[in-house]
Amino acid sequence: MERTIATLREQGIHSILAQFTDIHGVAKGKLVPLGNLQEWVDVGAGFAGPSIAGTGLGRFGPRSEYYGRVQPASLRVLPFMPGVAHAVCDGYAGGEPLETCSRQLLQQQLRRLNARGWTLWVGIEPEFFLLRRDEGGRWQVADGQDQLAKPSYDLKSIHRNRGFIDDMRRTLTELGFELQQIDHEDAMGQYEINYRFDHALSAADRYMLFKVTAHAVAEQHGMTFSCMPKPMASAPGSGLHFHLSITDAQGRAVFADPAGALGIGQLGHQFIAGLLHHADALCALCAPTVNSYKRLASSDSASGTTWSPVWKAYGDNNRTCVVRTVAGRLEWRLPDPSCNVYAAIAATLAAGLNGVDQAMPAPQACNEDLYMAQAQGCAMPPRLPRDLASAVDALCADKSLIAALGPAFCDEFLKLKRQEWDEFHASISEWEFQRYASLY
Image 1 (cartoon, helix red, strand yellow):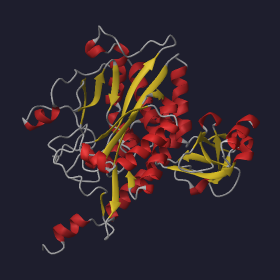
Image 2 (cartoon, rainbow, N blue to C red; image 1 turned 180 degrees about the vertical axis):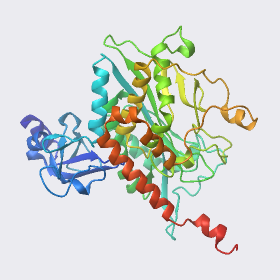
Image 3 (tube, rainbow, N blue to C red; image 1 turned 45 degrees about the horizontal axis):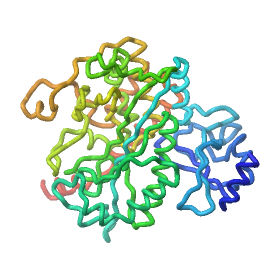
Image 4 (cartoon, rainbow, N blue to C red; image 1 turned 45 degrees about the vertical axis):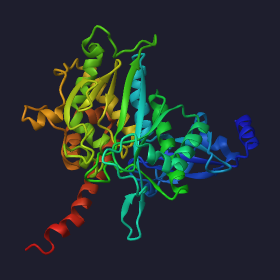
């Protein structure tokens, strides 16, 4: 540890940003001195447990303190915070791993997988909006000239926002991201930055670092990096698609089978069946906000295209399904960027493994555009939940998924999400004023 401290000091580092992720998927943390690194690794940086959403910790006693134990392999010098190195933390309380810590939750599921000699690889595709407030305090797209009818791949917007984009490219590269592409997405003010896949835990850690970085860089440019799933009613929302693949102890792809249907073998189809079987409950964890269900709707889009997964179906390179098979791997299209990425990956893995363990048969693959089929009045696959309350009810009723994830985390999550739904219903929207204030 002394060598690590000396190396960081040579780079001008004096503090560590000890960062953990709360139950909502929001990055939290504090600055601690570099010289005490051994303490932060062995004991952890201390936080008042009840001040953190979803810990379930009380206001007194040995389990009232949340300790974020620094993972030394995660230390990265932050280009946008001179003198500071970022570190990922695991949650502990009373000297034991905290059951309500989402990073611990994911590691628990990965241990189940590792016992089979398998490794989960995840490629995460972050979509996001760049927003700012107008003089009246209303949120709007940060780039007022970003108004094309079909905005996908708009080079003029990329040119106008090249300062933010290039700072993101430079900063992410310095942090060790292997960038693959940056593009303007299908809504005004919407972008996507793709980078190389990784082991599941590293992929989740990297996404949280991506968000910390994007928030900081956007603010430097007078903008807000937004993970709100659907900020504009008439435009597509943002997804956080997971590209999933599993390899065995010999490095062979478990899902892929060139001779299998859609290039997927029996285990892959069973994994898909597990995802579809638990999809309603998975909505609560993968699409966890009131606004998420504005994205998960078969509504019209100003661009004429929508990419939202609405139906519980899968198909070969079919972006109208919640599971898309491509190149021998699975794209899980349900998650959006408001999710807790650790919990979403953990729940996805638990559901898929349940499909494998129960040898669940997958339904027939979908080989049509489901939006066109709906418009033509065809029989449709079952829909995903239409609102957060329905998804929360589905998770509450899915006893096998709760048992796999552990009731401690699920109980805290369900309590907070029911509260969120109640608060939403207690609010009065602008739509209601416009519709009802002078009508009657």
